[in-house]
Length: 64
View 1 (tube, one colour):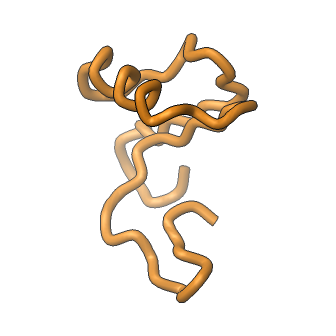
View 2 (tube, one colour):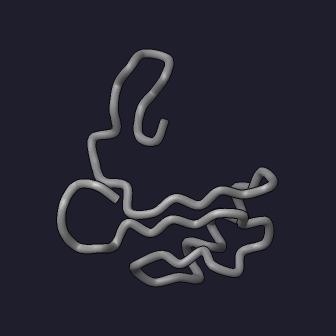
């Protein structure tokens, strides 16, 4: 589930603009490097180990 804490059922109070799924665990340093190397909107394309990338940028509605 994206945006939900499965331990106590709370939901994210914000927006999810994109999701990246990786074939490995990224280090804290790698996550920081991805963030620093990009400007809004963040772009993870080409990141080592990326297997799926979903950008929710259609601009209207509530369904991706």
